[in-house]
Length: 173
Image 1 (cartoon, rainbow, N blue to C red):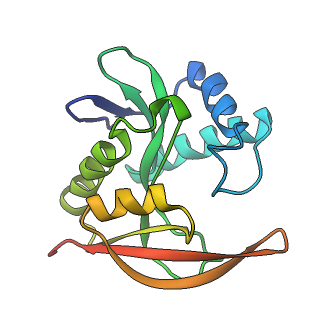
Image 2: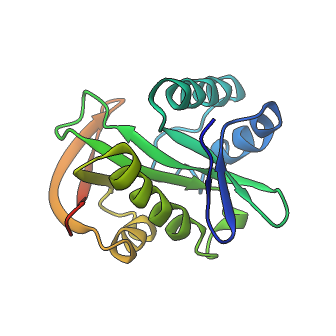
Image 3: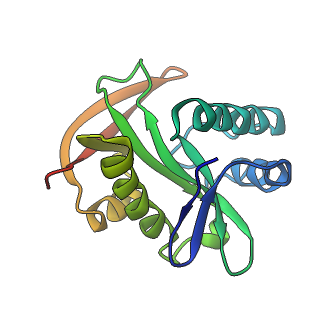
């Protein structure tokens, strides 16, 4: 299993003891504010299994995110193919952190390591980041990563159309 270490973080495969804190995160309305409906514990568990299958199959995907010093699970970060129903295509970088982990620079630290991994190990030429137009916290991370706002689109989920923005970074940038 591929792991990625940063100064403070470990991006690793998923373990059974990640399920409870992951489910709690995804039942938090603030964590899910820009992601759609809250997840049930069953939906959260299914997402963990899906993430691990992607890591095992592709060598990249969404890793569990742990603070190295304490071993605390604080969320996930990774690279994954953009969903087929989106109006853009490519590989997307993403992160989701527990509220207790916000404001510590963990998303930026993990994402910088993922950009390096995606460009050098996976061989990607470009990496995208997609978020809702009002998710200023994630857009701030995208700016810190040196990504450039590229386009806007509206995405419909459960009958609700939401403005989104796409950020891009090329390997040569």
